[in-house]
Length: 444
Image 1: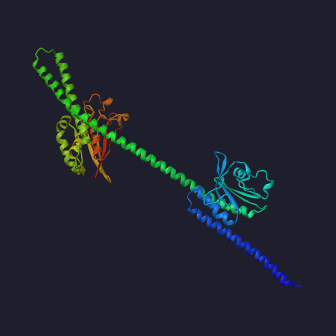
Image 2 (image 1 turned 135 degrees about the vertical axis):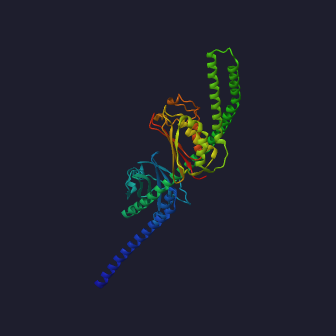
Image 3 (image 1 turned 90 degrees about the horizontal axis):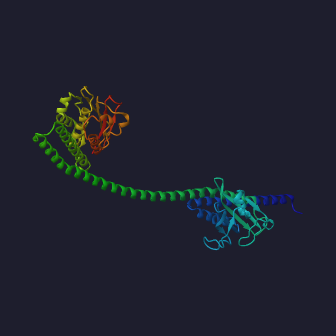
């Protein structure tokens, strides 16, 4: 008769052995899951991740058969994308691929419901679909991302009741880990496609833009050549017309007073046309001038401007206030002289009746530029016209009584742009004067 103590020890050893084997099994499964989690970090495509499930998990768990399905919701079908066992005879190939309609079979049901299914005896489950050969146990677990089933891990075994709840939990963990990585792979693929599309779009737009720039340059060059040729070639016949009319006016004694008055209108018109053509000639040449920026003393520019406009200043009793500490800027002396002269002449021209022009000139030093202000007490301008004064040949309603070609301020804008600056007009309305503000860059 055996000793009871020995029997008890045997029972305890047997229980410990069972626990040890269970712990060893759990440790093995944990290691398989951890290895799988690490391995799929290197996978960039959905196919590689699905094959990783079949080869790095199912095979190592000891399952004899497994197929991983991908769900196409648009076509309402499940496609076999990876396999382990008889369905995978070699490398990464699947033998005799089949597709299953969504909602059909155990796999289709899981894809539709998102709930795992464990079937202990497929022979009594009418949903069971035979693939390569009938098997008696089936376990199907969904792969879910953003509350949507995107795949199903389906395992089968020839024995009844082979799969356990532990197997369900293992595959659920694998499915959850896979879903996160699959989402990243899909997002990365979409990002890559979007990047490729964007690069292609940028290339196409760049080509179109370059072509448009080329055409615009050619068009501008042709327009400048045309403007130059037209303004240059038209001056000669205009001078001829004007000169002969003056000869007739002075030499013809029998002209009536009315005829003489008409001829005066025509001579004045030809002179205005000649002035307009000279302005257009100068305007069209601004863009094409190739000059090197040099140090320009704005004080010298101011003195030259006052000298050139001395007659107009004296005639209108204009008062011009300006600082003695004007800066030195990088620019083109001749163009800056034209800029200052045009702005001061504009303020004198558009002065209020019986009120002597008063022009205040000031400047501020900024980080990369100088900002100049020309404030006058002239007729001002209505708000709706402030953006139009720099347009070529601009003639505004409240300026109809004032002579001019409409080129002066357009030339000012082009000169400022040639100095990498900006110009704008500020006015509170008619009778309240105007302020022209422009910037000149400090550097080349």
